Length: 195
Ligand SMILES: Nc1nc2c(ncn2[C@@H]2O[C@H](COP(=O)(O)OP(=O)(O)OP(=O)(O)O)[C@@H](O)[C@H]2O)c(=O)[nH]1
Ligand SMILES: [Mg+2]
Image 1: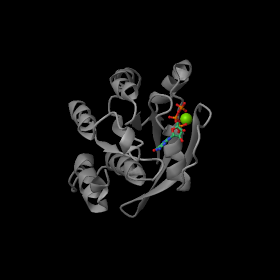
Image 2: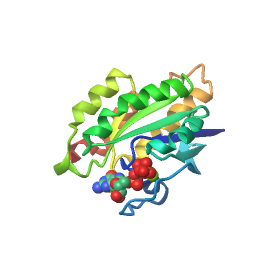
Image 3: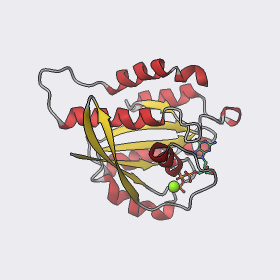
Image 4: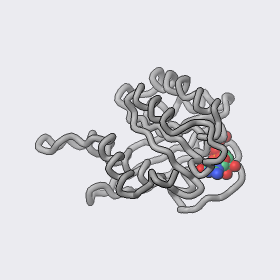
């Protein structure tokens, strides 16, 4: 079972940095060159079972857009990022969602992430704006930081859990509810007093 996950969002929101933080547990400052379809696989343990996540990084720049479209079709999950210090990256989320609905499978798992949560003093998007947008589209939401690592693991493991519960039928078990899971984990990690 290999679950395909792709990272999308405007150039500079921190997709590659988030992936590096998840993979290596560190933040490498400075911009990465615009990335085109870099993929790697990680094993994530979900309820004592190992799930293989294949994660694809994409480039946010417009000129790479046709390459990105090719990844949508096979994706089981999409992590859609904006940068909390960039109003335009947030405003573009609607356009990204339109594109996702056009090219991705209709049952794709989408998670909205407001990245760079460590840059609170330069914040342009309040957290409740992110929450409201996510509610409008019925997608889970959290703020992350590729720099400090806050919520980075949670974002990927929540997606893995959701995908696994969909891929494997458990007729006698209650359906996994990603929203509730995330809210419970956020409280546990005490993440939210951080902001
Ligand atoms: N403070 C802070 N800086 C970040 C964070 N995530 C990324 N950055 C910085 O933001 C810039 C862009 O990060 P990238 O990871 O290259 O962005 P990207 O989304 O992959 O951009 P493209 O590949 O062009 O689409 C870099 O200078 C990163 O160091 C974060 O969580 N906090
Ligand atoms: Mg990148």
